[in-house]
Each structure stands twice: as C-alpha cells, then as structure tokens.
Image 1 (cartoon, rainbow, N blue to C red):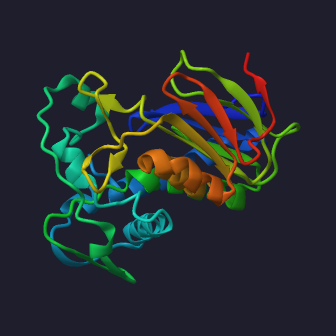
Image 2 (tube, rainbow, N blue to C red):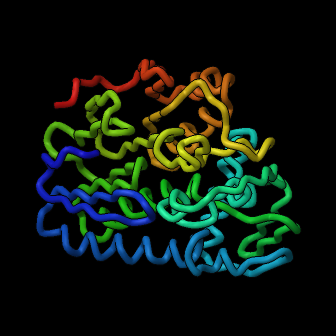
Image 3 (cartoon, helix red, strand yellow):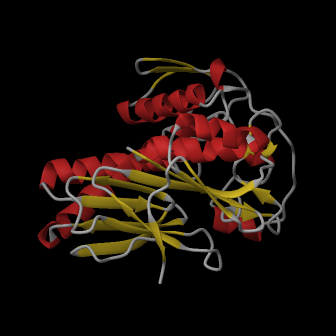
Length: 299
C-alpha cells in the first residue's frame, strides 16, 4: 500500500490484485493511466496463463514469438539462472496440477484435486532471438517475473513520455522512476490486513517487491502459489513473507520469491545478495537484513 501524499494517484484492480499509479505532476495522471493500461494490456495479450494470449497458444516445438513475449521469457530465464533455478518459468504444469489453472478467485471456489508434477526445468527451454523452443510437457508460467517486469516498464514509460515522477504498484511489486515527491515515496509494507505494518521511505528510482505464502492460497489455505520446481509442490519455507528493496522491481521480486522457494537455505542466499530485506516468519516475527530502510510504525 502506498501513502497518497504524492500529488495525484489512482487505484484499480487487475490480474486478481490491486494496482496503484501515483505521479508527482497531477496533470500527468490521466495520460499516465492511459499509457499504463495500454502497456499492461499488451503484456497480458502476450503472456497471460489464464486468458486468451500468445502464451496459451504455444505447444511443444519451435515458435517465432512476439517481441513482448520474447522479453517476458528472457527475463524469466535470467531470473532462473540468477537463482539457481529456484524461480523457474516451467512450473505452469505444477500449478495446474495443484489446482491453480484459472484466476485465483475461481480456484478458491472450486474443489481441488491435486496431481503433483515436478517442473520440467528451465534449462530445457531454448530462446534464440524471437525463436522459442518448448519441449513436450512444458506449460510456462511467467507470473513470478512478469508482474514485476510490467511495473518496471510502466514506470519507465510514464517518466520518459510525460516527464513526471511516477510510482507503479502491481500487487506487491512497486517500481518508481523520475523524481520522488518531497520526503520520498512513502510505502507501507504489509501482507494481510491483520499483519504487522511498517512504513518505509523509498528514494527516487528504487523499487520494492513482496512475496507471500499467505495471500495467494487455495484449498483452505493449505496450498500457495510459490512452487518448488524440484518437487512440484508449494515450497515449504520458514518465511511467511519476504520483502526486498532493489533498483528495480524485477530484481526485488526475483530475490523475494527465491528466498521463500529456497526454504532453509534462503536466508543465507539472500544475505549474500546484499539486498535490503524484511522477512516475516510464520509467527509474525519480523527480521531485517542488509540495511533495510529506516522505518516508522504505520498509522
């Protein structure tokens, strides 16, 4: 949640999550929203797993894909490489096997039949320019990186086109570009409404992402969407929520997701990245790492 102390902002729902746009120039709000809507629509047409998209039309074999889908797959493969495979775009079949084959609101109303399917593995994908080769049995899920990538793209686009400071929040992925308002961007870090909330100040051009095992759940909360690619099941982790600050939302989200998926080894891995982080254990104990930003208790 972002404190609307900035000059102008707007909220809406998309992709089963809450979105927010804040700009330092109030006159830029309407054209900024138009730019963001168009950018997000293009990303959805290319990479959605739930709605009609270019991604859904892909089967095994070699395909020439659009520039947008190429970029979405490229950043997903880079995230996999940077996390030793913890953030793996081939977990789509695993998610469907666990019952996550539609929007989360629909999944929560359905009776869940679980079929455990380990991921085929990101190394079995080949991307050469716009040529993507998929082996049999692979269903791509780009959700672990696409939302953060979209936030980064939208923030840069608004700043470059309209010369305004901007914050774009897509669920737990928050990107900024251009100048910040006086006092910086005020962000409240919180997972569920009853969880401890802390307010931090983000400097201009920085980002924050939060990954959670508590928010996107189904089967009465027994299954969450952060998948261990090796087992094909929800990753067991000592952390309920991990928030990370970085120069861009994609880097922050990749780190927060990988920390949860890596389980007991996640803390040491995250510490080695040097990225500031806030980790919340299942008993809601808060741990800070790598110089987490100065914070005040949120009102």
